[in-house]
Length: 445
Image: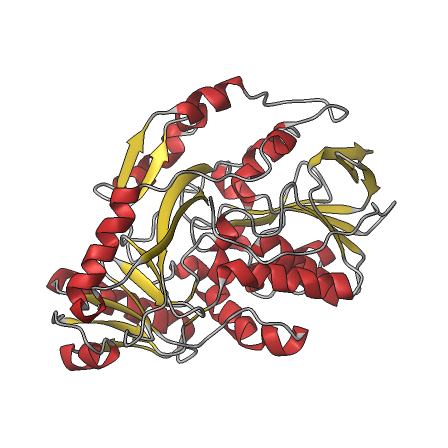
């Protein structure tokens, strides 16, 4: 079972008409709904399962600018600003804490990579962030009780953490109070068009007329958009995580190296993962999209394991086009809840204890896994769709969505409303995968 997520009451009646329907109730969907609502637009959000039921509640909970891809760096800076004011502005508790994030290492080559990233970031954003290279003494001070020394690291004091099981539900509950329709469980089956542009969303409970639709369906976005013949190149990567029972005397900053990553939780325990080790099932889409992902595969050699299992045959049997008056895959699978890879997460905990032996009494409270929606260049799609006026897509956040979620939602709201964009959206356009743009993986990430 996945982590326990805070509950959100559902609206019981479907609105006949709104300005915008948001499909998907993760951090991207609720953030988009929030900033659309701030613009005075009528919004309904449809979620097939429950709010934050999938990756938005299963991630590490990091909110960082450190080591972002340069194409999403400004977005991450803007998102951190929003995280710092969300609780105050909405009267909620997302668990946000400005704890600082450290990337420590024993490797000279990795240290050089840290310095290169920091130089590139400063060239782009000047003094808009507080990241700095730190020496062994400073690393030791940030990791009290550590029995292992490091050559140095990259530290951003202004980075933080929030509670994934709490954040998106808290935003959704605040939105309901201001009149945004939060509809769960309410699967959106598809989109109707009139005169070539969006006119309605058909759900399992009825039709909602609208002028615009934002697809923020995470792992389901490619399937949903494919029914409109809109190709969203996206594959799923499984990441496994564990949480411990409460522990006293451990570090308060969040940190990572190639062996493990951790953050202190609001409940007193730690979320721990095995660095950047992930797993991906081979599926029919793996073959359809193979040539778009060649560079991504090269960049993940040694950290990504690929296998074949039941998902291949499930997706092979799944229709890629369907009528909107019949039940769909979105109703058949309300929540993706994959099995964690126990050796991965347990190895991460062992490495954590090697560094902090005074925490060797740590007890595992729960393990879980989630599917990250990954694009060929590992940065998101935040974009309109040229071929379907009124259709917008926010997906493919490649494991970064929780941290940059608020700013991604604000940028999406700007695009929908045709307002001045929070940041330049050019790098996030869907058409980059079809207009001849070279797929590039940021080596600094």
